[in-house]
Amino acid sequence: MKIGILKESGIENRVALLPDNVKTLIDLKSKVAVEKGAGERSFSSDQSYIEKGAEIVDRSSILNNSDLIISIHPLGDDEYSKLREGQSILTAYSPLINMALVKLFVEKSITTFSMDMVPRTTRAQSMDILSSMATVAGYKAVLEAANHLPSFFPMFMTAAGTIRPSKVLILGAGVAGLQAIATARKLGAQVEAFDVRSAVKEEVQSLGAKFIEVEGARDDKNAGGYAVEQTEEYKQKQKQLIQDHAKKANVVITTAQIPGRKAPVLITKDTVENMLPGSVIIDLASSTGGNCEHTKDNETVVVNNVKIIGNSNFASEILNSILLMRLFVALALHTIKKLLTNE
Picture 1: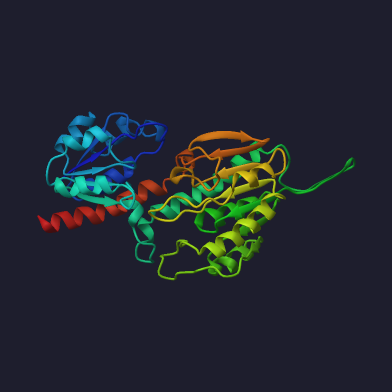
Picture 2: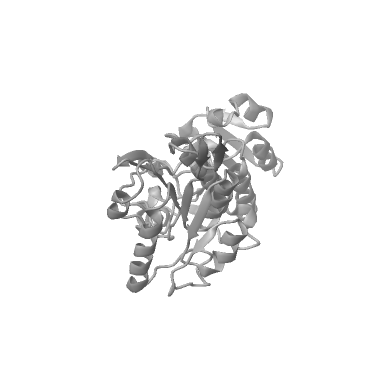
């Protein structure tokens, strides 16, 4: 089997597989080709791939000759036409949203594996890309907020007086939210968290944060750990409670997303208008529309002296964390075994 590793475009710093991972695939009697320069921004040179047995080629060679193509992000729109029937793609392309792309794969008889659709079960934990990358995003979000906030996170007692600790509001207590809570608490902030899932209340409290609860939430145990759409009555209660707490917060970090849907708006324009001057909003749902009405993906917007940072690329900023590369190789190994069996 011929496996091709693509170079990521844009501001992405990660690479789908590191040299050590490549060796694992070669040990399975597979041939591995890596696009020239694919690992440079992850501190993995072309030579390091060659030393592990990979071949360095251009992008068109990988698209034309690989049985299995591996990348973090989907291919360019003009590249799908270059694929041939029977090829396989391992990436993360959000099939619940990109239905046109799914239809194209079906028409061209291309087998696809989307990493963001791996179920959040015990058996699949080693391949859960969303949880691992959300951990990185939650951690980086707090550090980013601390850098932009014009005050300290912890309380300081000096001869000149006492500085109160910053108040941090976390909206969404999933993996990213829990990591954000833990990091903010370590920095000495007073932390509050909101989530529609009552099951996370104990987790939030165990990390030292106060859980903000709205009565009447729908909690679907079959949703795989994700939030579900709520009733209009609940949304109105939620909106008012979030606004009341956001007004008093120095930092708001939003993480709420629903699979296959636009991110719910939790911070309205009116809320932003009433927030403390100099406060910061970090919106981790910016890639799916954002939890704040002012959010723009991968941009920083300032409204009424409130800084709104939409960043969907935090996961690529910590290159020492090679979780993603390990996850891709875990699913790649599974995929290879399945494909070899079918052959």
